Amino acid sequence: MSLDSELDPNRQRLGSIMAAAAKNRAAGPGEHTVLLPKISTDPLDDLVERVRPQLGQAVDSLHVAAALEADGLTDRGARVEYGYHDVFALATEVFRRLGPQLPKPREATARDPRAWRESLRVIAHGPLYVLPSTAFPAVLAIVGRRSLVLGLVLASTLGWVWAGAAAHGAYRMLGLGRPRSAARILTVAAGSAPVAAALAGAALDWFTGGGPALIAMITCQVAYQLTSTVLVFYRRERWLALAMTPAFLVGAAYLVLGSGLKLWSVGVAAGCVLAGFLIAMLLAVHHGRVPAVREPSLRVALRPEVPALIGVSAYGLCSAALLLHAEAPYLLGRLDIAIAAAPLILTMGVVEWRAERFRPQAVALVRRVERPREFVRGVWLLLAREVAICLLAPALPAAAMLAVLSRAGLLSGAGVVMTAAHVALGGAYLLAFLLAGRERFGWLCASMLAAITVHVGLGALLGAAPLLGRPGSALVDTSLYLGSVLLLQALFVLGLAPILGQARHYR
Image (cartoon, rainbow, N blue to C red; front, side):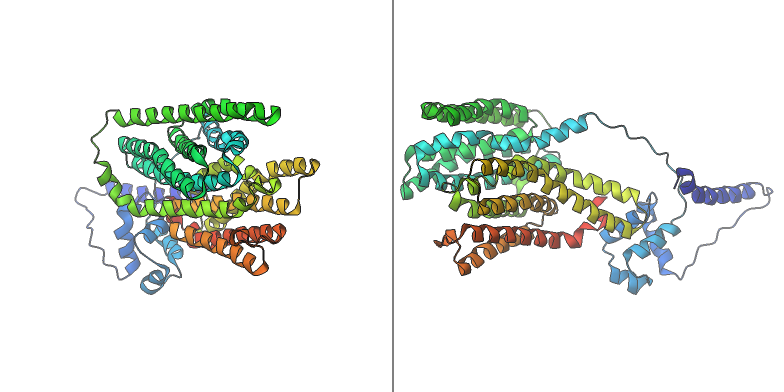
């Protein structure tokens, strides 16, 4: 449909109004029009007049429906009070009765050349997450097998929760126009995280052994997670890459050349983490001292955010448990299963990118379609497309990794299934990001706990639950994990179902 055909009805109605006005002006000086108060027995007319001030510039019935829903009107109210089947049917009639609008010229949107650079910046987060991984073999040789697994689980969990809460609080403050509060949150979080990690590492060492090397490893891993959080927040991913590249190169050289570079690999990795951490701290402190409008104290600013911060922390804890409870039993004994998460981690930037792009695409869909049913259908098709992209992104490197393992004679059926489970997690994490954007943290945590329970519980019944001391068949265990991830996807979709198709969320 062309632009002219869309505007013709409005032009005709506008023309009739102007013609009536001209007729009134043409009347003689002794003639005048008497405007009597309008008396209406139709409650819909009253609704139209009540909402006209805020909806006079509504561009379609979807915008009207969004405003009516935000005002508390439900489908039942539309039926009982106004005699329409639902809010969308009522909104269509309200939009019609609001009257004509002067058409606004459509502006051609120039493609911003910075958009692709921004997309590439987000996509690059995945490779940044795996940069320190080449140092782990050398760390393993120093710390020991059992201590390394326990340390990795502890450090990953602590860093995940700490960094997630810090990032959420900082972004909330930034969104409220309080950049200094955001910087203070990052400074406090980054400064306290290594201390907490060292204390946790000391406690683990007291119970299990491992020595100073274990404590240093846990401290460095948590420090790196907070470093990446700060530098990503301030869009300094390039600084993070430059700081960690020497650690990646020396670690790779150790894998190729052997044990002669063991101490070099560990030392360079620790030095790179320290350098990146100092850069991040200086950056956060600098932004916290920039003159700005007076902001409330950090305690006052964060008080309303406490429930959300608790939800984010619980979500981070459940996310870590979802990944680590399945991976931990195989970290040292089964290479093909232990590295099954690598394709997912490598492409997590793609998942973040598509999650960020979902809302702008949904907003564009609201402006493009004319009927509520078209929007509901379109937004679900949009979600299906984005999930498919987030499944394809880890599937490609996963296929390459499996081919290399197969050629080396290291691939098993359990490794293939575990890799497939982590590919499926790509789609699940996209859904999780969308739910987190609506602060559905209770549903997120309950869904992940249900998936973990199904995996471990059925494994215990079938004799394949390594966490419970029943190793059994690795193929059975990984197959159950794949099933639990698919269940998780279904639960996440179920959580999105009541809110995804509501136009008011994309105003």
